[in-house]
Length: 179
Image (cartoon, rainbow, N blue to C red; front, side, top):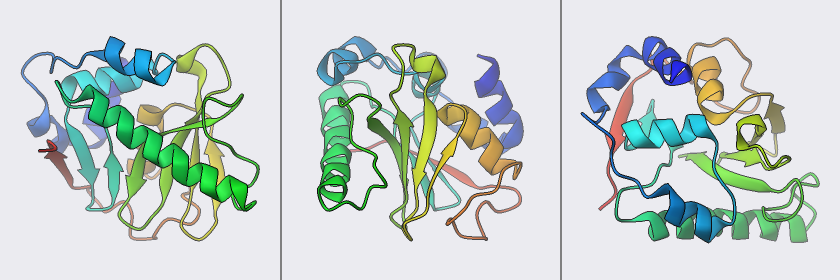
């Protein structure tokens, strides 16, 4: 997929974490449990790579083969946290999926920032990214998760509320397989 190739060009050290073949994630289990398909760029990332950590800061959570239900549990925990923020009017009007236009988490930072898709269409390829910064900085990126990573890691977009030291030059990446 072209967008994965762009990410690999942006962060050349990423390729050392690439699986030799498809990782074997059962996307159908995940999508059945979540009640929605997931974006094709993200699925391609999850088929090729484990959980990725950029600059010891931004975690991109992808499912591990055979642990799809654990992945869904993590997504639901993120949704519960967002619901708690919504309940006390601290989510800037955002609500968790499955509410219409709700948010579905795909990443986080070690500083408490959250990265979501806004599920605003039946076509997951059109979902945009919403960032919830730890300092109450909420903003959107008009593209998907992998496109966001390319833009953020190439420093072609501003990253309101994220540390000025992120990303480094060049970004460091570590692949992590949950136990």
